[in-house]
Length: 112
Length: 115
Image 1 (cartoon, chains in turn blue, orange):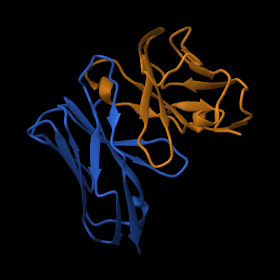
Image 2: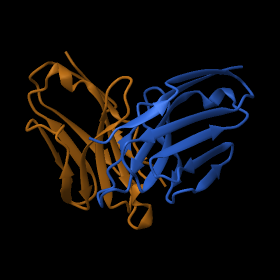
Image 3: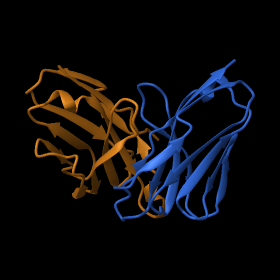
């Protein structure tokens, strides 16, 4: 079945640093999404990407849809303590159902 | 505009008991999804509704699981004869019609613990 590999698994950084994480797949996706999840809560949508090569920003977050359609990355600039959480990539758009395939997550910790 | 709501937030049950969870999607979202998430993993797709029709079910959804969305609004997920392996967070998501149907908005989840 389809699988997404996220890296790194975890990151521990200093406040103010930039962060980069990525997601790769053995299959093509037509949509890539990035979510953030806090403990005990559901994932919150950060960015959705619809076109190969597309670069989209949401505040301090920037994400890109890889040109091969098999990868995506997320950058966070000037990290702050509230960026702490688990970041998930998700691939979709390969069927009309909207079913998403999620990565295993990248855990981010920010030291003030 | 209120988000997706799920009830209960937590459920503890004994093995063999039946449990039912409810999801209320964002109004005007015609698509509704159920996912299951275990510790340290991303959510895994269980099933999908478009309006009241259940259009896809994962292999993860065994015969003990049933989901309904009778009037195309709220949805219920029932697990019969629960097993310890059913312990997980059950997440509901909804998405709008049109081009943005992949943009799924998640509820807070129901944490199930089977003793």
